[in-house]
Length: 72
Image (cartoon, rainbow, N blue to C red; front, side, top):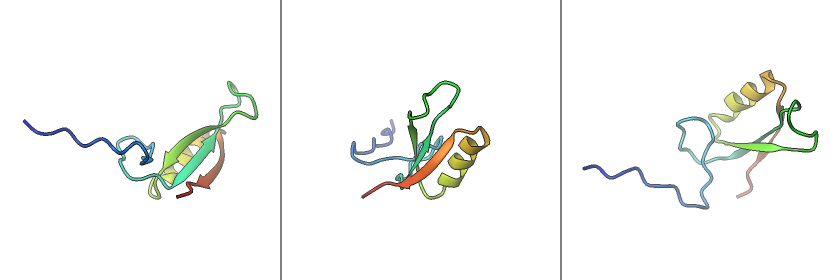
């Protein structure tokens, strides 16, 4: 029997991209104007590799607002 993959420590922030387990370095901030008020913001976490992909996905839908660094 193999051991399951270890769970990340609670304080470790992980990239939101599907299947990625890299440490998050960016906050990709977005909202869906059809269902969220203008001041409502949602956040996806992103590693360096996936930040452009997540940003592009949201931008194509008109949801992207900004990318902020994660303060360490």
